[in-house]
Amino acid sequence: MNGVCLDVNPEGCVAGVRAWIDAEKASPALAAGPQSVLVLGASGGYGLAARVVAAFGGRAQTFGVSFERAPTTVRPATPGWYNNLAFDAAADEAGLLAETLVADAFLDATRKTVIERARACGFRPFDLVVYSLAAPVRVDPATGALHRSAIKPLGQAFTGHSLDMMTGQLSDITVDPATPEECAATVKVMGGEDWLLWCRALHGAGLLAPGATTVALSYIGPALTHAIYRSGTLGKAKEHLEQTASEIGALLADLRGRAYVSVHKALVTRASSVIPGMPPYLCALYQVMKAKGLQEGCVEQMDRLFRERLYAGGPVPVDAAGRIRLDDRELREDVQAEVASILSRLTSESVARETDLAGYRRESLALYGFDPGA
Ligand SMILES: NC(=O)c1ccc[n+]([C@@H]2O[C@H](COP(=O)([O-])OP(=O)(O)OC[C@H]3O[C@@H](n4cnc5c(N)ncnc54)[C@H](O)[C@@H]3O)[C@@H](O)[C@H]2O)c1
Image 1 (cartoon, rainbow, N blue to C red):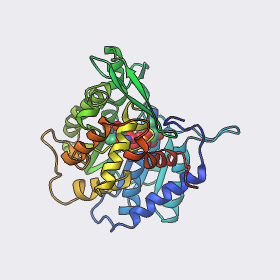
Image 2 (cartoon, helix red, strand yellow; image 1 turned 120 degrees about the vertical axis):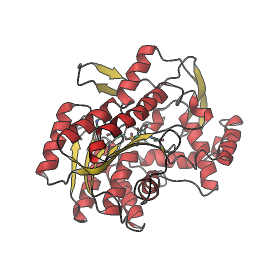
Image 3 (cartoon, rainbow, N blue to C red; image 1 turned 180 degrees about the horizontal axis):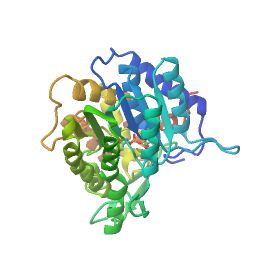
Image 4 (tube, protein in one colour; image 1 turned 180 degrees about the vertical axis):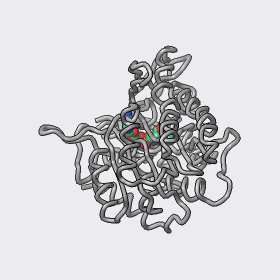
């Protein structure tokens, strides 16, 4: 097993979602949070956390869209399927309006279904739309062409380490630079085009409330991950996402709406586990951030986005490029100096001792509902 688990433990997935909900409920209620929220990419990671914070922190109505595989007679569903069931059950118990749709968010047909269902279920116009998709492929609704993203460097090859999280074995990996076509395809899948289409459709349908906010998630990371991330194909897609925020801001001007890209910290999710070279970085980062009392999970990051950025009462704090920053703790100079030092001397023999390999493994298995300690 190397980052991707082939089995799923449904009860464990349910317990994981319940733990996130309990964590959010333990925080003071969100007094000024959103009331009607659409989350695109709601079944795991940051999107699920946004849904949990909105619903269980602020008692918002939530509509969640995700792309998960249902169980068959011979194999279990994907983890997000069980996460959705767990969320819906908890929302129902709490008397919260929640609608969950499993469908390809890139399709115009899905936009139409969301609009129809939101009306039929009695949703108020959305005052928050969270765009948290992490997808490998997208069919462009305008052309019918299938685009496949490629997580690759640009210009020159990337060399780094892959990590077998069960044994701690590090192996050298080299990823060749992307072709211009691969880069363009990655921007098609993970850039802002689809986010804009969603905002246009919702706005056109009158399903965005006055003052509505939309936020899409991004990552920048430190210099030592730039070759594979920020300076690579995914970085180009994220730049496109950031450029799209201003276009969406203009679209929402008549509503006095706001569009932001929010930059988050690196965390173990299904999406991040497939980025070449990221696992050793995550293990070192977790080690340092935990030792300094700075570590946050998806729920803590989303809670901070709502409480201290979007709904803090004043102007939303942004960087010079207009982005919300929640990677402030990850990018602290002292954190990065220690992470770089650990990574510079890392070997298969030292990885368990010098990094939080155990925590990384625990969180990776938890994505599939497994508790290695059980
Ligand atoms: N994990 C990190 O370290 C990290 C850090 C910063 C920013 N981000 C960003 O956060 C966002 C979410 O990533 P994540 O790490 O939470 O990923 P994730 O894999 O946990 O979640 C991805 C979600 O997208 C959904 N999805 C994928 N394809 C879909 C489709 N075609 N239609 C509908 N839903 C679809 C999945 O069902 C899932 O709900 C991404 O934009 C990512 O770049 C992640």
